[in-house]
Length: 85
Image (cartoon, rainbow, N blue to C red; front, side, top):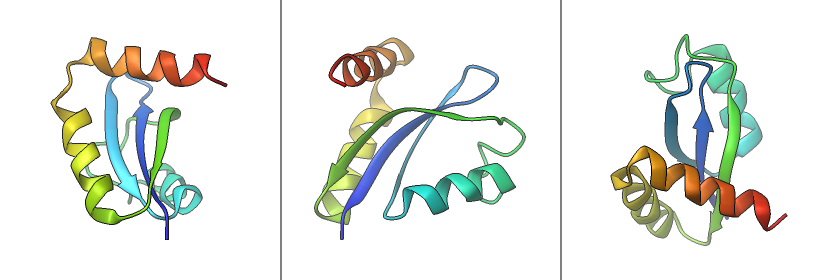
């Protein structure tokens, strides 16, 4: 089962980093207000970054690493992600 580490940009321009093994379902939960306490009332959301990992442990480790980044570093990560597409 693949795990996704993702960054959402909220409508208030803040960034949220999370993990999931069901990205479409997780986005629905964020939209409904049940995805994460932080994102409630901050929609609409835009996925600005996503990466896949083979295990939950690796995804959790990467999530923690990304959460330790400052805003500018997260935005640079997202910009590099979009330039590769």
